[in-house]
Image (cartoon, rainbow, N blue to C red; front, side, top):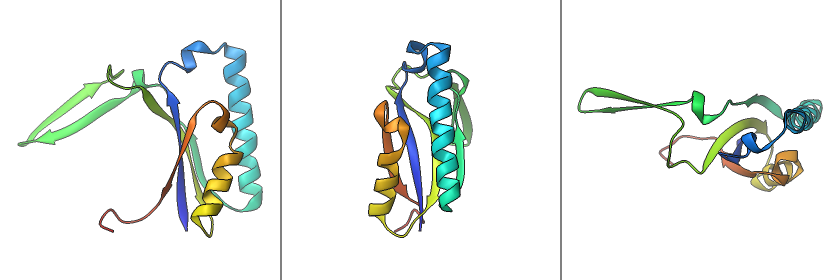
Length: 117
């Protein structure tokens, strides 16, 4: 079963870090990813840039609307994700609890599946 671990971080968190602190956080996350890969449960992992680089696209009445970030109403952003394979939701939660980012972010665990069920 596939699960997505979304790294939900406060929007202002990255600006509050020094470059050294940011590099150390990134190193810890890379080490965590390598451990998941060695265990055979990692499908994909990516870090995402801040909301200032983001855009939102909507389509209404045939008109495309694009809004560029940062977004004033945003309190959190998806800082990255891990796509993992494991047997149960409980195992996905246990893996999320091992993630270094759980110390400074919220890890949202989502089962991958169709949107109609």
